[in-house]
Amino acid sequence: MSGWSKAEDVSGVQDIHYSLYADIEYEDGTVAYGFNAPFSVGTHDWEHRCGVIAADKPMRTVRYAAFCLISVFMNLGCMLSSAIAIQERSGLMI
Picture 1 (tube, helix red, strand yellow):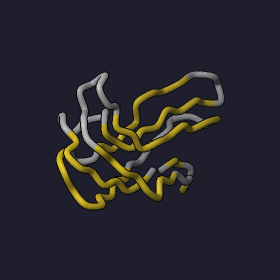
Picture 2 (cartoon, one colour):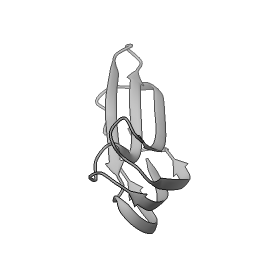
Picture 3 (cartoon, helix red, strand yellow):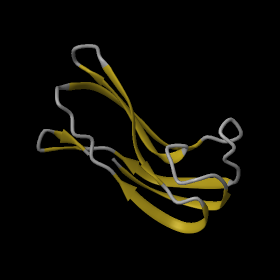
Picture 4 (tube, one colour):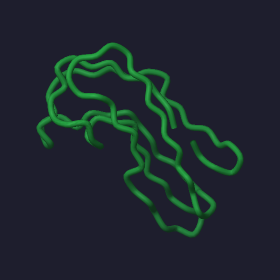
């Protein structure tokens, strides 16, 4: 997965709460949550992040997004995201 984000006064620490994020549903019905590639907090121009999801079994669905969880986890500020993508390469989702 890959994408870009730009931030203004995003508080908190660099973690899952302001990141590219994906949940995986495998063909056998099991689910894996929380694959992520965190963006920097604070104020910054466009920043690129990417991450590899190394699946150990066939995937049915990938739900992904770039997000900033505001208020519930005390992340405040403004963020923009662009060119969020996920693609399969050599049997791996990236």
